[in-house]
Structure formats: C-alpha cells, structure tokens
Amino acid sequence: MNLTLKKSVARHVLPHVQGPAQYLGGELNSVRKDHSTVRGSICLAFPDAYTLGMSHHGFQVLYSLMNDLGWACERVFTPVPDFEKAMRAANLPLYGLETFTPLNQFDIIGFSLQYEVSYTNILTMLDLGGIALHSDDRGPDDTLVIAGGPGAQNPELIAPFVDLFIVGDGEPSLPVVAEMWASMKGDPALSREEKLARIASANEWAYVPRFYTPIYGEDGTIIEIRRLRDDVPEAIKACVVDDLDAIPLPIRPIVPNIGTAHDRIAIEIMRGCPWQCRFCQSTVIKRPLRVRSVQTIVSAAMESYLNTGYDEISLLSLSTSDYPYFEELVQKMCEVFTPLGVKISLPSLRITETLKKIPALLQEGRRGGLTLAPEVARDDMREQIRKPIDNKDLYEGAEEAFRRGWKRVKLYFLCGLPGERTADLDGIVEMAETIAKIGKKVTGRYADVTASVSNFVPKPHTPYQWNEMQSREYFRWAHRYIRDQVQIKSVSIKCHDIERSLLEGVLTRGDRRVSEAVLEAWKRGARLDAWSEYFEPKLWWKVFEDLGLDIEFYSHRARSIEEVLPWDHILVKKGRAYLAKEQGRSLLQLDSMADSV
Image 1 (tube, rainbow, N blue to C red):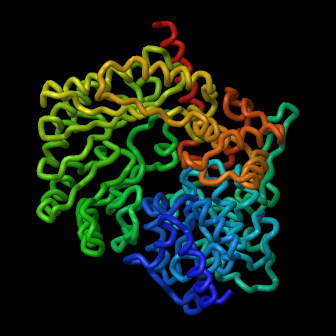
Image 2: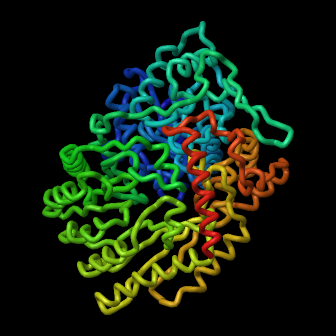
Image 3: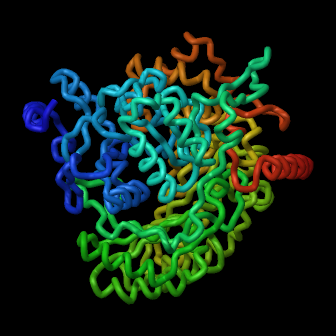
C-alpha cells in the first residue's frame, strides 16, 4: 500500500473512531524521515494505549537515540478495540505514526515490555501490522521482531512470537542489533536463522529463543534448558551502561496532542537502587547503581523545558531521595525553575530522615500530594522484606508537609507477602489513620490519606521467586478485612484487582507452554488486559481450563531451590546463588516471626 493510499484510508477510518485515536501523529518534536534515505527503519512499539506508552520515559530515550544515529525511528501503540475493529473493516494495516508506514515495511519492530498483562497486545499489533505471529514463519528479510524491558526477564511466555530479546540496558544494545541486522539485509546466502545466530553469538545479552528448548520431567517441572547451537551464549547476561552521565537524555521529547498518564518532562537522574528489598525485581535487574551529575540533569531539564513548554518536571529513579546529591539537585532545580512557574515532582521517595527536609526544599513550588511507599507497617515484616525504614521519619515528614501546605498523602502497601499476619494488615490502617490525625493536629482537619494496596506477585530474579502466591480467597478476605478496620472518613483504601493479579502471577512465573494460552486468549478476544473496561478474567480462566494448564502449578506452588526455573538461563548481576542465600535467610526470619506471634 503506497503512502497516498494509506493516508486516504486513514482519512476514511479515523473520522468514524471516537476518542483520542483520531488525534495521534504530527506531535511537537516528532521526527519524520524518508525511509529511502536512511540507514534503516525501526518502529518502537509500546504494547498498550498511546496514553500510557507516551508517558514512558525509556520510550522517549530510545526514540531520540535511534533518530540521532541516522535511523528512521517511529512509534506505534496498541489501538483500542473500536479502532482495531475499524482498521480491520477498512483493511488498514497498523502503521508508524510518523509516516503511516505499515509495520511489515520496517526493518525492525522493537517492543517495550513493561508489564506482563500486555502480552496479548503484542499479538494484536503484529497481526494488524501484517507480521507473522510466530517467528518460525518469518522469511529471511521479514521485519525483525525484538523486545526488551522488565518483561524480558522471563521471556518464555512470548518466546514463540519474538525473534530476539535484549536483556538489560537498551541504549548500547539496540544500535548494535539494528546495525548488524541492516548489514545482513538482502544477503541471499543468509537465512533468518543464520542472521539471528550471528547477532546472538556476538552479544551475550541477545537471547534468541529458537536456539534454546526446555526439557520437562514427568512431574511437569523443567529439568534442563538445552542450548541447540554451540555458537550462541549458554546463558544470557544483561547489557549494562557503565557511565550513565554519558548517555544523552532526550532534550526534545515528543509532546502529545492529548492528555497522557504523566503529562510532563521526565529526567532520569539515577539508574539502579542502593537497597536490596527482597520483593523488588527492579532493584535486582537494574544493578549496579549509576548516577547523573547535577549539572547534566539541570541542563537537560532546561533544554527540555525550552523545547516543550511543559510546566512540570519529574526527577525519576527507583529511589529518588537516595540520589547522592539529592539536596543540591532539588535546591538547584527549584532555584532555576520556580521563577518560571515550573513544578518539580519527586516520585519514589524513600522514608528516611531526609523526608522531612523535602517540603522545605520545595516550599516555593505548587503543592501536590505526597506519595510514599512504606510497603509494610510492622518492623519485623520490614526486616523480612529488607526495607529498613522508620515510622518516626514517615510521621515527621508528613507533619512537615502539612505544615507547609500539603493536604494529601498516598501510601503504597503490599498484601500477601510471605509470612503476612493479621497484625500486618492492621498496621496498614493504623499508619494511614495516624497520618490523617497528624494532618488534623497541624491544620485542624483530618488529612486525606489513600492507602493503595497491591497484591504481591513473587517475581523472577528476586529472593521470593521460589515462594507461592496467595490464593484468590486469601486476597478477598484480606481486602475486606482492611476496609472494615477504617474508622476515619478521610482515609480510603484502594485495593488492586485480584483477578488481574492472579493472571499476572501466571504470566510472570510461567514457562513456554503458557504461550499457547496467550495465543488462544488473544484469538478469543483478550485485549488491553491492564484496562478494567476491557479485561475479561473469565475468558482467561476458561482458556487455561480448555488447554489443561494448571494455574496452581504456575502461581500457587512453592518451588524448591533445586528446581530449574523457566528464567534460569537469564542471569542477573549477583546470580542465582545470592538469591538462594537470601531465600534461606528469609525462611529463618519467617520462622522467628511465627514464633513471636
């Protein structure tokens, strides 16, 4: 389909689609290039709606990087179901937003895997884009399908659909894959398999699923992950950026034409986390800790402001207040941007004595809500999850915030952790209500406090990867119990959807056999499962039943340390031995907690 015809079809379809789809493309700072004049073409694919994908900082980083390297880099997102239906009715292929080029005409399509419940969206995008769903069905020069991000830590669920996974940091690895693929394009002597083998053999962070196969025992567990070629890595190691300050920040980020989840400038100030919480996958897979200089951050923020006109800048990291030059950075940012009417937001604040300084540092800015993640409320459970914080710091920080004009606090908690007791659930409400009372002491009225309660899913590459996930019945009881304890009206409890968490448990911890269920669920209509209005849990449970896949086996079964896990060939920084050691320590602490009850 030529460009003129594509635009004609788009004009025919888009006016009949309700919602934001008709306003996408042509945004400020987006880059359009003639594909015939560049080294190659790549379309970055975010397997969810535009409003979420355009809020992801990493997406903007890679978009800027690849365009600066002389490639034509475009973007594509999952169309909402009504737009998908309209596209299929008009025989319109899914396309890159910059030039309306169908996905199957790009050299490479790269998926950003941020959460597991987006997996069926990948199939929607491939199918609409005219790309064969299974990697084995693609020809030598067909579009290369790659993927990276947190979801690549257990790639087996979508292994049949992806040609190559990049494990680790994308800034150094994506250009390497792109250049190697471009250099082999059109070579009649090279099959697709040989091209992929050349990339994998040259890069220890490149995982090509077709070169590995799991061997199962009679009990259904994996006994071996067998390598099928000697010239590819036996185990996959993460690609790591050593000098984060040397990686350019996107200073001309795309400004969406519609509202998005995070409508602001984002600046990554630090990668990695100095802490080692046992429940957290990010703190393991993002190691080692790397930081940007204050000058680099402030300069990039100013250039981004001048190139966009945004009135809010978010300083991103896994634990922003642990940035080693935190006070200097915040003071400098406020000094530069407060006179311009630009707000500085600080997500991911750790609860330490630094917390009570933050309201003073931001005292000239516009007041927002204070967002904190204590995760649990009891000291012995904090020792169990290895998140050492002090309630005294939390309460003093909240008091100082109320004194300086803040009125709302949001707290993030986990429900269903190993060894969780009724006392831990009581602690969630007690902490939220204590903060509400502090607000009344300072301002004369109870503060608005929201306790957001997530259902714990044991993640790959964490010390809890061997633990079982709690049952549906337990989560229902726990959510009801927490809500029943609340006595202060300004305190609200928001619990995450149980059915979606249970699905995440299967998709997070499953092996390659579960890919059949992903495909079948998609065929039966599973779409945008992260969205409440589209998620159909009964569809998934029926698929698992029909295919004979045991949910208990994947989600609710404790696994022995000796068992081969589906992701064991994907190595993390400290390795399996470290995780096993931490799991052992956790079990000893759980015994101690049980004895103290």
